[in-house]
Image (cartoon, rainbow, N blue to C red):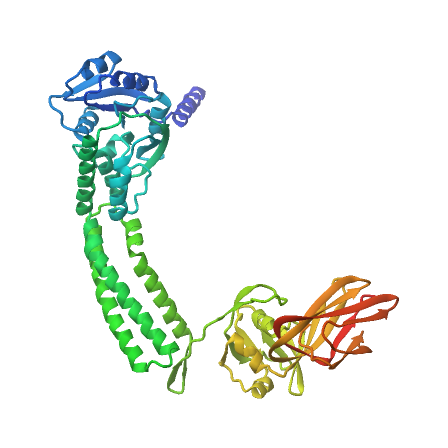
Length: 563
């Protein structure tokens, strides 16, 4: 019995370590009157790893191409007459016996085995089904002037650097799905078919190569065949329809969507245009947009049915992009209006409010030079918080206040607290505050209106200094006026600063730890100094050209120094 387990263990080990089936590689070399270079190309290919078979397809040559290829050790298949590069490639791959087929031109002067191997290796490793090469070269005129513009127009998802490169490799199974053109259009035809059919294709850089320069007459023939192939594929796969009919439908859809957006904007934001005109514009836009969007969808479905692999997504996104953006803008507008809708006692009210873009153009103290704030919605205070006002950080920034500051509205003082999580645009006010400020639950306040609503309220603002000391400054919320900055120095070292509005020739007092210390009469660019337990304290005032909603009260500052 023991021997049975030993044999079983060896069998299992051999199964586990068995290598995957080796895939053989054939190299097809189409040649037409290439007696000077074909032998050298065959010799280089023979030295390359992975290559099991070399086939030269002699496409009706009138020179010694056949004999040179045979001497070099290649298998030669002859065409009696010149049938074209595409026919030569097709003949070669159909006669080959291997799993992977590589196609290499016969006129490359500086071909190396490393270049050949770099084409084949990604397929052997299972990274792709097809590899096409890119390389630096002196020519490429047909590619740049003909192929790329047409591909970008009809097949914008194809963005290879060199879609016409003659060197490529592929699994034989996928080549059976591709329609080989008989002429110079074969290269771009393979690229397009692979893209549309969803076949994986990778562009491989093989460095510089040296081809024989083609005469202008041959380039003209090549360009014609490339154009014919691209246009033929575009027609076959519905891309002409996409550019023609669908393109027109998309443009008209955008016109309709734009009219809807214009109508809604007119209704809600342009006061001098009658409501009826905005409504009419919106209705016309809706009819046009719906009609042509349906046409776009129908044409798109027809086109997708022509494409087995459904690989038009990239092209559709690029061509439909303007329409998609218009739809997104419209949906955002509609969602904004829906969010601003209120239904109360049989009355539907839509009151959209936009945020304020805040851009500081002066040198006033601030947290950031640009921000977007508001609008804020008024809501009731939380239970047992009748002495608190909760507001978002943006609203606090606008009012120049912070958490734990206090604000006196009429004869009552309230603590300022931050909004609760998830309520970033909610200002919660006690009943008495709403009554005094003439606000109701559900009112929407623009950021710029905060200073008007809280005007004449008195704020006690707390600010930490660098040496762990604090200051309390008192100011009245007012409409923006020219402000000054003040900076506090302790023994000639700056420990903090702030800003606000001081009135010229007005008396202001300074307290220390809650006790009156000194007073001064404000004048432009004043310096005020005093002693505290052997330390020299100086407050330097400086006028600025900025504005502030903080107008300091007469007892404007209380300093608490660290003991």
